[in-house]
Image (tube, rainbow over the protein chains, first blue to last red):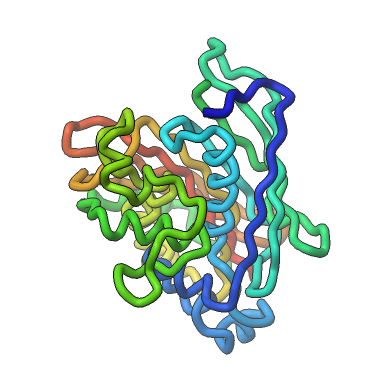
Length: 131
Length: 159
């Protein structure tokens, strides 16, 4: 299992393929029409169907969990959704361990998530993992 | 039209949900670029951690069972939030709603057969930058009475 220490960085990349909002909808139960129906997404001013923010967040969690190697190590995660992800977008996640949590039993870190145009799709993303 | 702040404190739930191993696998497949199916096209995407899908590998792990991908929790923990944002007493136009922020705190892993009971409480309703914000905190407890997930859900309603 990888050993992470303050200062360590990691990256992760995911592309939102055409059917990802439908697949994530099926897996999560989030069938809000703005994710499933491009016409509804367009009416909402989103330019078409957009990916569930919770799928983008899941990818951010995947970035952390892959780096740590243990899904049970994730203690806290927080994100702000700053821009929609649409089919065709590729999101690059870059995580950094910034320090220790209170008591030293955990590590804390920050995460960025940028689309292929370099725009942030998440802001203020933070996490805490058991060490 | 702003949202009536007297809804702060309103509680939703309890809602119960039993975790099933196939749904847990399918969630992990969907996040990792695969198809959430046990038949058509459904298989573990390359590189997916076996703890999320392989019975034998998971049994040999420290958890002794397949565990859910952490944000699988949306399947049960989101319910009070969706009930609140569709509650006529809040009067939210869903087409104008976006998910603004999200936080999770995990206290244990989730295993097949776990029965989660989730309750939610509206903690904040406010206006900022011409938009309405609705914040809910949820807590999910398993069949052993152990708290497993706490979450904070923030909806933003554009005008």
